[in-house]
Structure formats: structure tokens, C-alpha cells
Length: 468
Image 1 (cartoon, rainbow, N blue to C red):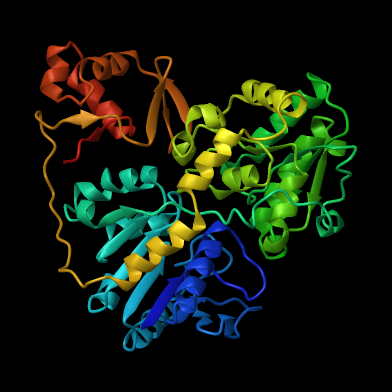
Image 2 (image 1 turned 45 degrees about the vertical axis):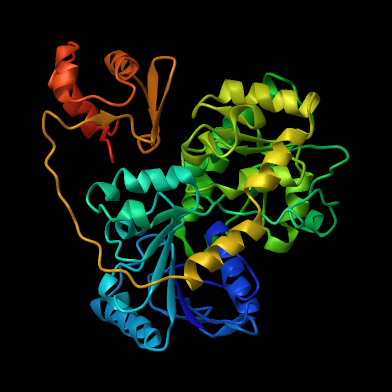
């Protein structure tokens, strides 16, 4: 079978620039090993225009003229967009299946005649959001149930067919690779002494939402309140720093913050870590922090670190609320540096390894073998379905409202993943307690809550119409 794949991200023969390309590579090679011919069209860069192979059956062609570096990949001339459409259309003429990785090909008519699987790999970037609303594929793959519910409660309000076509295939982790691994080559990149230093890991991209400022706050508390000595925090420098003034400015702002707090000796900025050395990198740590407010579609680093024997602390944001039960992962509310520092100190001094119960759960639910089998089944057994249709129902006094999946309640307050803020809304808490399956404006009015309150909560994203 000839399988065409699309990636708006640039791809490389010898390095992986994030979790999404890593999973694309895994899926493509798995299909190649099953005997299928796979061609991947991806974004080209000045330093990456030559086709290459990931496998004898997997060819990668960096030919698409999206803007680099990210963001705003569609900020290119009209003729470059036309070129993208032409290239993809030409390749589809000989394709039996089409797989769109990240859902960022925003021209559904291109693939109307080819069985098409679309995987949405993030919940944050505009192109992926638009891709969910422009969905015309035959199957939509969410990489966590949280993400599937997000799509159903937004795009699914207008696309009734989406519920029947949206499936969840959890990201899988290669536990034979991500396991405790002695530090060797990694020490040439990250100059620390694992026998002497207490090592905090922050293995994330340089985006404010990824939580580096929150890591600085926690390190400040560990050093100055808990008096942890020889503490080193490892922070990778994004490999596109040289071509992105935005990235350089961000690093500069963080380094200024670190200097003002007197923590220069507690941070080590180092080169981006190649995928082959990530198990060594994770294994170096005493604790890994993921404290940002980025609305992850999955969030690989938290779980890969656990696989390598290093406990993780995650902000209770998006998928991290539900991928592991609370008793199996240390979680904090976003912005709660005090609790995060307390947990980090406990981990450093009392419980240096993840529990066996945590690892058993991860092995059972997030296996790469299960993930690859599910992707192969979803792509290879696709059948072309009729186009999806839109249904636009008016919101009225009988519409039933519920708390959306991107919000959660705690101690009478609500956190909204997309606003990254906590807000106390006592009347909403009372309504949800009285009507756990949702309520209409009429029911809220009878309960004594004015309709303009509901209108405000809906506009701010704290309520959404129920589906189904």
C-alpha cells in the first residue's frame, strides 16, 4: 500500500525536534516495517532541502514552503500556499491512504477522494485548532481522552459526525528505551556531577507556557528556603535559537530573572539533547518539573522521565490531570510554587524513585506496541466515508450547559486551561452541585442565578453546551 503523510514541522535525518515528530517517525517506520511504502512531505528549511530516508520503505521529502521558524507557518506568499496544495495533490494521485500529522493541512478538498486519517497532536497552536473545525477526514485520532473531549465539546458542536469518527490512541512510550540509564555521553553536553549535585530537570521548549519561570521560582525556594546545596537545574537551549530573535529574547529574560534572584550557579543552559541520549538525560535527574500552563495534547516528558526512574512533578493542567491517577503522580495547581517546592524537597530527600504502582500503570496504559498497532489499524483499515456536514443549533433557554473538559473545580474555585487562571465562582459551584448533569438557563434562573451570569461564564469558557 502507498501511504502519503503530511507534516507541517520540518523533519531531519538525524535529530528529533519535539514529541510530535518523534511519534510521526515511529508510526512511519512501523508501517514501513509492515511492508508499506511511506512518503512524508514536510516543511523545508535552508539547511534541509534534500530528501532522505528514515527506513528503506520510508522516504522524507522536505519540499513544502511553510514559513520557518515557527510560529505562523501560513505567513507566506500566496504562490507558496498554491505550491503546497499542488505538491500534496500531485502526490495524492498515487496514494492509497493519507495521514495528516497534527491536522495542520487546512485544505480539505485536497483529500476528498483518498481515505484520510488526521491526528491532532497539540491543543495550543492556531493551525491545529483550525484543523479540528475544518475536519473532513475519515477518522480523527486524539492522543489522549482529554483531547478527544476537547474536540467534541468545540468542533463537535457543529460537526455531529465527529463523535463517530473521533478515536483516542494514547501516546505510547518505548519502555525498553526510556529506562534508568547510566550517564556517559550526556555529561559532555550537560556538565554536572551526578555523584555530588542535586539535579533538577526542565526538558522543555523555550516557550513561556512551558513553565521555565515556574521552575525558577521552585529552584529559588529549594535553594533559599530548603537550603538544598549543590543544586543544578538543566535547561536545554532550543536548536533554532540562532535563527529566532524571539527565542533569544526569551532566554535573555529568563537569564536576567535568574541573575536577579542570585541563582546563576544553580542553572546550567546546555545544547539541545539528541533523542538517543534522552534516557541518560532523564536518569541524571533527582526530579523533573513540568509546571507550565501549556495545554498539552499528551505531554511526553512527564512520563518518559518516570520511565527513567526520575520522579516528575506536573502542573494540574490539561492531560496531566487525568493520564495518571492523583495517587500515582505528584501534581500541583498551576502557579503553586510553594507546594511544588515542598514536593520536590520530599522527592530529593525521601522518595527518590517512582512507585512500582506508578510504573505498572504506565506499562499497562501507555505502551508503544499498543500505540503502533492502533495506528496501523486506523490507517490501513480506513474506508472513505461521506463528507461530514455541519449543524448549527441556536443556544436558547433550554440549552443544557456543563463544565467543559478544559476546566476543573477545586475548593470552590475554577481553573481554565486556556486562560491559565484560577477564579472563584461560588454560584457556579452551587449550580454544578445541584445539577451534576448540567443545567439550562431556565433551571439556573429558578435556582436564583441570573442568566447574565451564565452568559459571562459561557463567554469566558467556564461553561459549554452539553453534547449528545
